[in-house]
Length: 63
Image (tube, rainbow, N blue to C red; front, side, top):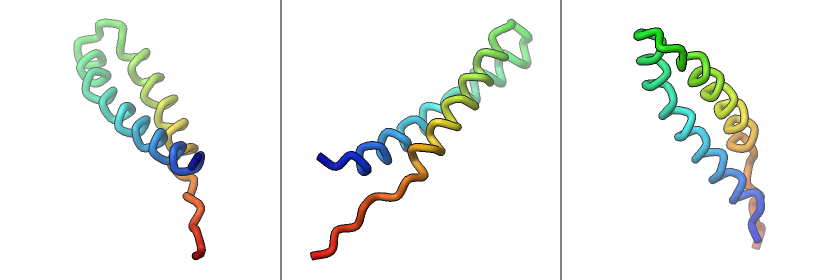
């Protein structure tokens, strides 16, 4: 099993998920409905996890 490749893909998917939290967070902050803080905290938590897992390099095979 290619554990490093899988963690890299999961990291990239979490980055995409983190990016989707920006627009709802901005809308919540503009309308001050109280959910803006939750969206921004989730965005930064997901971004931190994604940068940790997405920043790992895959192992190169030498034939």
